[in-house]
Structure formats: C-alpha cells, structure tokens
Image 1: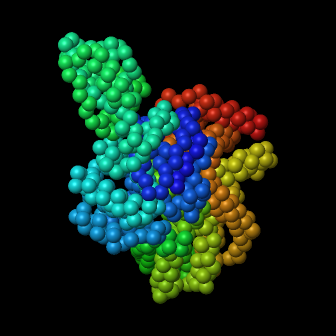
Image 2: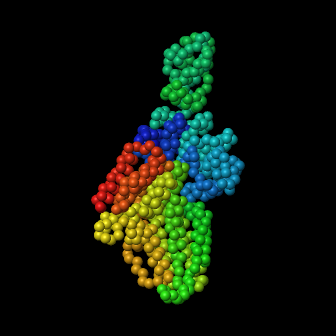
Image 3: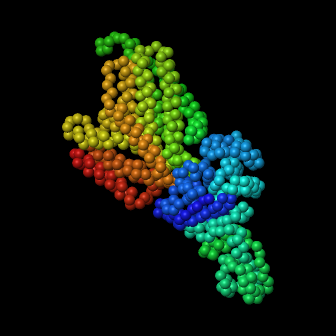
Length: 292
Length: 340
C-alpha cells in the first residue's frame, strides 16, 4: 500500500503541493488527473523517491520511500520524458534496469515483439510513440509491486494503448500491483482505473471510487421553448451549456430530483445521457472556476 | 551494488577503449618521434658529449590531467538533466552508492588509459637508444596515480556542485585555481615590502594539486635525465593528499543532500558562484599590487558581471547579485590598499 500523508512541497518560494493525502491499495489502479501544472508529476516524483517532501510522509508498505533501497526496489517510476543515453538500445536499457530489479527478460522480449520493435536499434532512432512503447515494455517486464506512470499514454497509438492496458490489467491481476497513472487521456484512464484523484490548487480536491463517483454525477439534455440561463435552473450545477434552446446540464445529486427540477421548467423534452470520466473532469474543473 | 558497478563499467567500455586509444597513440607518437638525446660539439662555452633531452613524462602527465577534468564531466552530468535525475534518483540505490559507483568507474576511465599509454610509451623509450635512468619511470607512474587521484577528487567535488554542465566546468576551474590565488594573495600581503617577490610565484603552485603535479613532473624529468640532485619536499605530496581526502569526503557527504528538483536549475550551491564570484573578484583586485588602477578594477568587475549573467541566466539580475559583486570589489580594494 502507498500512503501519502500531509505532503507539502515547494520549489524555491513556489508552493507546488500542500497537504496532499492519498492512499492507494494493492491490486488497484489509481488515475491521477489535473490540469497542466497542477503538480501531478511532482507528486509522482515524490512517491518514487526522486524528490524529498518538505513535510509529510510517503510510505510504501509502511516504510518511507526517500533514500530507502528496499522500498524503492518495489517501485518503478516511468516519467513523462524517460532518460536514455544517446546510443542505448532496448537491450541496453534492459541491462541497466536488470542491475536493479528482478527483470523478466522473456516478457520484455515478448512485449517488444508485440510492439514490433527491435531490441538492437538505438532508442534515439525511434519515434516518440515507439520510445514510449520501449519504456512501457520495460515497466511491464519489471513487474513492480508499485508502478508509477506519468503521462502514461502520451504518444501511444490506439493499438499500443490497448496492449498496454491489457498488460497493466494482467499485472494488477497476477501480482496485485498498485498502479498510479497520471494522464490527460481520461477515456483510457476510465477503462483501467478503479479510483481517481483530482489535483487542483496544490492538493487533492476530490478522490474516490471512480465508478461510484460517476454514478453520483448526472448529465441531462433538455430542450426548452425559449433559451434558459444557468440562474433560471434554480439549483447548483457543475456545468451548464446552452446552444439555442437545447441545454446540457451536469450536476451532482439524485438523478430523480434533478430531473424533477428540470421538468418544473416545462421543457419540451428531458433525457439523461451517460457521463464519462472526461466529462466528469471537465465539469469538476469548470465548477472550480476554470474554463469560465 | 556490484551488479550496478558491472553495468556501469560495461556501459563505459566504449569510452574506456576510446580514451585508452587516444592516450596510447598520443604518447607512443610522442615518445617514438621525440629526440631523446643529441651529440654536442665542444665549444668555448659547453663541453662536448651527449646531451640528454626531455624524458617525455610531462606528455603523459598532461594527458592524465586532462582526463581528470573530462571524466568527472562524463560521470556526474547525469544529475544535471531532469530526465537523468528522475531515472537515477528513482532507482533502488542510495545517492552515496550511486556516487561511489560513478567515482570508481570514473577512476577506471582515468587510470586505465593512463596506465596503458604509460606502459606503451615507456616501452618505446626503453627500446630506443637513450641515456635515461629508466628506473625512475616506475615511481613516476605511481606518482601520476597519486596526483591524479587528488586532481580527480577536486574536479569531481567541484563539478558535482553544479546543476548544469557549463556551471560544473566553471566550478572545476574555480576550485583548481582557488588555492593558487589565495596563497598568492597571502604571499603578496606578507612579502610586498620585504624585497622578496610577492603575488604569484613558483611556490604558490604548491597550493593546488595540479601545481604540485607539475612540480613533481619536472622533478621526475630531472631524475630520469640524471641531471643533478632533486629534492621534493613534503608539501607537494601533502597538499594533493589533503585535497583528495577533502574532495572525496565532501563529494559523498553532499551527495546525500542532492535534490532531484535542482537539475537544470541555477547552480546555487555555496561551493559555486555564490562564494566564488565575490572571492575571485576580491582576490584578483588584491593581487593587482602596485599595478592597482581603476581600469583594472573595472575590468575585473566586468568579469564578475559576466559570471553573474552565466550564473543567473539573466542580464537584468536582482540587487542581491549586485551586492555580491560590490562586496567583492570593496573587499578587494580594501585588501589592496591595506597591503599597500
């Protein structure tokens, strides 16, 4: 289990994280979301032991991570822009990580083969997505107990994303690994995450079980005889968009109550449409004053 | 850690081969093409006979010195990119051990090329007709290792204080010359009115490992050529030893405090620009001695400003940096006037 408690982190005088609390249990995939510059990468770098928190603690199975070889051996961190030396190949990369981790060379070879990548070609010759595929293969072949992925799907094509998600699902199922993924590809996150956290204003402002929280948010589409305004609705909404006489409303709460309130405005029609993670995120950040 | 050491060594084998080949070729060419002696006709001024020329030991020593500057750049620059810091600091290895492995492999990258080149070059000399006391090449080899360790330790410590490669190179130059300038300033203060030479003298070279190595090299050359009595003095051994101990101790102690977020940022270490800019400004002005002119002070101030631009990466830097430069100038002028 990864336990992050009361973390504060500053870069010089600039506060990046304040009182961040988070627990990710084994066998789960945690989606870390937030707008650009929210501090997602910083939080992952802290969890990986790259950075030392100014205050608070980060524990892996009860042990602090920073400068703790035992705890760090259980963690593999894949940053958004991974490091490689100019001439290193996929094989060379495996040699490097084999010096630190129990490494499944066979699985690594299989993943590279699935991605149609040669282990002998220098990584610098690969496209951005291919480089990502090499590192994704590496992460899956190390089979860590705790996998930290920053901008996990960045640059991957749809097929590679599918393979990666399958690999992650296998890892979580077989080894009961805990995975923390930060990504802006919320549709991908929704596919694999069971819990999520939204980083905003330097802290985790909302988190929880993804499925349950998606159930708490409702999106309605309604058409009115005349265009309506947000104020006319008379209840608190997370997101409101009106194009002509058709309005889209996202709100938290009981679906029947929201529907009843909308019906009180005598719409031409009202229907509930499904909400996905991306809509939930956009509505959430919108309700916090962004995109206004 | 052994697995990591083996990996790091394997990763650097190509570099090792390249450095070894360069050093060996340069030294073998130098020893095989240089004139080791010549016959001099008797004249009114000189007796005739064989004149023994340079032993060429300085060539390999210069190459060793260069390696002691270049290799730390190769070994410790990983922490100067965010990508490198992310990769290495997230690995299950403590920072001290990471530095230990990098240092050991760095020393191998320095001393294997040196050893191979030395053996080949001296073998060439042995096979050529010469009038050297060849036995002195043996202590000359071990002397090179001793001084090389001192220079490497100082270079490694200085370079690792930086957050960018360019800053690291500047810090290495700072630290390698600091002792020289400090001793020269003291020399100037003590001997200026005594009729003895002050400021920078041959003696001040003993304040830095590279200077001690240079003095050792010239004495070894004299011994190999069999030209007269040579005395070394303890200072040229003790000074590099002190630098080696201090350099390695600080390198590993400060490794614990290395922060991942500092990569690619301004090099704010107290062992870098913060200390060096005012110190060098003050010492340079103090060492102007009798040639003290405000135009020289202005030139030194310009140098300090240029360094501050490199440090802050800003042309319009804040008042605290101007204060730092101003303090250096004031202290330098005060020292110079006090000495006068």
